[in-house]
Image (tube, rainbow, N blue to C red; front, side, top):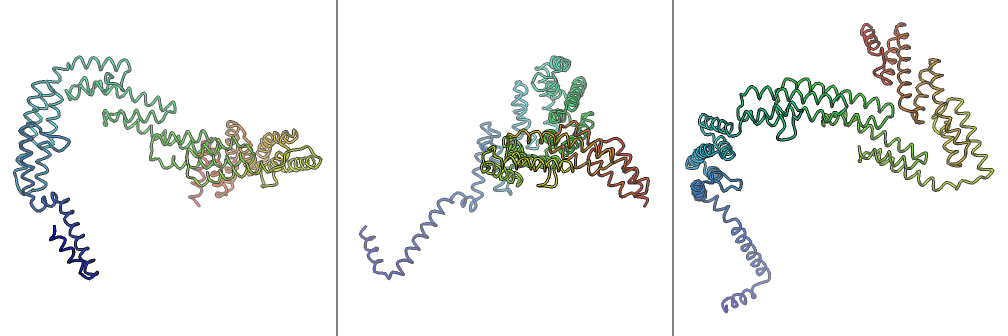
Length: 503
């Protein structure tokens, strides 16, 4: 101790720079010692791999003698021999040890089979296969195991139970259902013809259920059934037709979604695209369709907020969020809703004053003039709807305003009929758009679209007869946008294409 004190006293006499350098040396030395202690085992393994490998082989031999052939925690003979081989691949002792493990697994499988410990026998056979033991020897024990299981289990009894379950329509979903029972029988006797035929019939019955779900519009349920059939027998004869039916159902769902979206039937469009996506989660077109539906919900929310219909606007906004929560359109709709709320609060409280009454009367008159011109929704700011919306903001309970608003939808319907009779198709389209914006019902709207599409085909026929192929093609495009299933469209489109090719 006194010697250490003398050393410390001696070091204090050193120059400050030398003392600092000495302190750093001490720190580095202690750090190196700590690292060496922490890494002593890995370093030893690298410096003396043979010694470590020998230790692993000794542990593996001990595990083999104790009957621990394999273990998930790495303490089994198989895992220890494998670790020794990885550490020292140039020596054969570990390879020989693994062959001993495989031989022990075969012996265990044979003993367990005779003792009717079937689960243990299957596990031992699996280990023997993984260690690449002779296939002939492993297969012979596996065949013996199946035979013993069949004797104990009672194949005939299982087959009777499976057939009864199939006849009762209890095909899947429980251990005592037909298909799991057939599967169990075939694991015991893979070539049993009665079980093969029974499974084939049960799978066909299951595919009939899938078709029924498709017909009911339950596409996800149908797809799940087809996938279950594939799990039992990927080569079943009915699978290709079932898969083709699913693909066609997906195409129909996407087409329905597109038509519903064009008709502003957002609930129907969303359901159709969701069905298509349930069939195929990778369906990009269906996913894009749902994004378009989200944009339409956001646009509807803005329209409702502008009318101070805040509950409806919130509902539409919530529907949009469920489909595309990060869409910029939703953020815009949220801002528009907040601005509309603020605007309503800033509006003066409606009072019956001569000045306010005169303003409301003027707006109603301007709305009537715009209605006479046919300007129901456009141009912005000078349409009948815009004038009446302003009047409603000034006098929300004014009966004249409410009556004028109620007239707009019938006016839009008359506008459409008049334009269609006069063959003013662009005008008819504008009136149809107004009907949609004013909340016309889905069925009349669909009928109007079909009528307008048919009229475009008739006009296109005249243009095609006159040699005006480009005008005919525009008519094809307009009709297809309105109703792609309208009668006569496919034939007219084909003749228009043919005429264009001859030019």
